[in-house]
Image 1: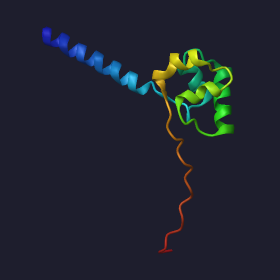
Image 2: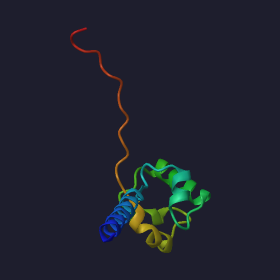
Image 3: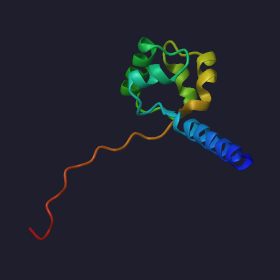
Length: 102
């Protein structure tokens, strides 16, 4: 019985850890609905402002750049800092070039 409790505790901790890892939101790729859903204090209007800012100014270099977006202040940034990530957006893939053997 004790072994079962230990096993259940292990699985509970593992699931919590996986959830914490997957909770990071990449502010350079997330769409407005994702931002609104995942970030505390960010609704649809502010989430749309984040996406618009990113599209007009380019990728965020750090999570601290979020305060440049109208509607995002230091309090909202700090409330969400642990769940934010800044990674480059994937580059657009070019169409495959014809091979030399053609």
